[in-house]
Image 1 (cartoon, rainbow, N blue to C red):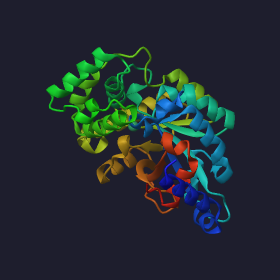
Image 2: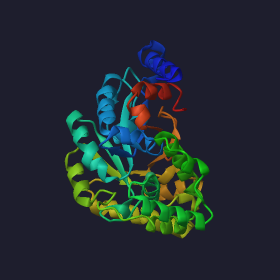
Image 3: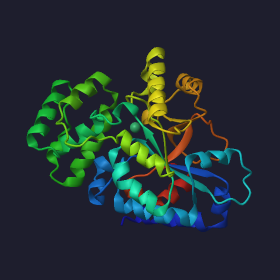
Image 4: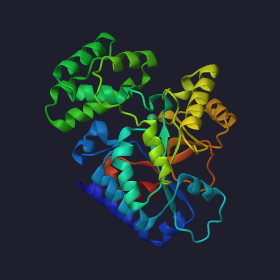
Length: 336
Ligand SMILES: [Zn+2]
């Protein structure tokens, strides 16, 4: 293990166990942000998956580790942190999952039940029970070669045609990790493409046999357990600040209506796709009766945050399998 990582983990451990660190954390809340939970840890560790994926084994380790230092509570209990006196309360931590991946129901939920840890899942509601696909997943996996060489070459050609050729590093690297890293950086660079271009490119990827998102039957099963609650993460996963006023209202209303129909008790918390928001988006989210919203800004909740831009700490395969790295990030107010 690199020396830098060891030093970070040691300082994370000191933070959690020292009286200074404990005093700083007393009465605060940490909202963790996860996306996918894959069956296989080695596959989740590849750089182009690492940020958005955690393996089942690392996730189980995290669920065992968290209660030693935090009270694992539901998101709504954590948000009450703002209303309670700090006292001697242990820090609270709440798990959130973005997008509504099918693997949350298949791989994460059994472990949440086993350890009785509550969680909140934020659904991009157009995807639920449909075969619509998330562009970064379909393109990332096609370019990784998961669906074979023919599909990979076809997509590379489409990308070249729209003036977004893959970088030389992607073709030069035979080594798994370096190739995956160049793919991760390349996928980041595609975020500024228009939604139309991203749709066209996703359509150029092969259709998978299984849908990527969970369906309403799974939503009901998870909700009935009493451990999981659901909230909106957009309808189409469009980045909200880029929508005009009318489209923004339609997007917010559609996601709201879908959850009202598909869930018993949807959360009064909005989760911005990609964490993107501005003053206009926050005002419209509040007007749609959401007193709280989650951003992707790193940080911990100490009761002074804008309730419509609450910070979170993201969990990757790397940090889930080394939870003291998470402790280190918490000690730095969420900064990496
Ligand atoms: Zn998302």
